[in-house]
Image 1 (cartoon, one colour):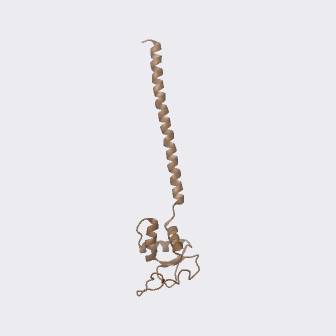
Image 2 (tube, one colour):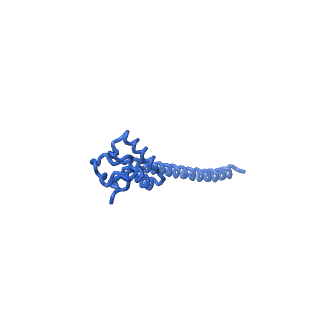
Image 3 (cartoon, one colour):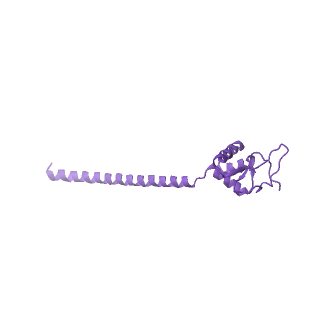
Length: 140
């Protein structure tokens, strides 16, 4: 084999290696762009995601009245897309009462809560006590 044939073969091999390198660099760029897009979407998702107390506040605002945990639980379950018990709602509100000024307990009505920003009596006049002393549905 003469030197010209070796050079021609090496150029062919070099061209093949260059195509492979170009393909790898393209794959790397696409991968980095996808990773960056996923990270950006994840960050947007985190920013848009509400906390459970925020969803609870949203439920109270939509209902525009103080509510007992038995009434809050199914509405919060729909918002969160999972079953939430009244006991869990109670625990959630009491934890939130300790650390923020978002909710307040309704005087004289156990496990019944309103938004702290609402004046006393807002949405509470519609509550009534059932025979067992539990707060029931609003009187219509």
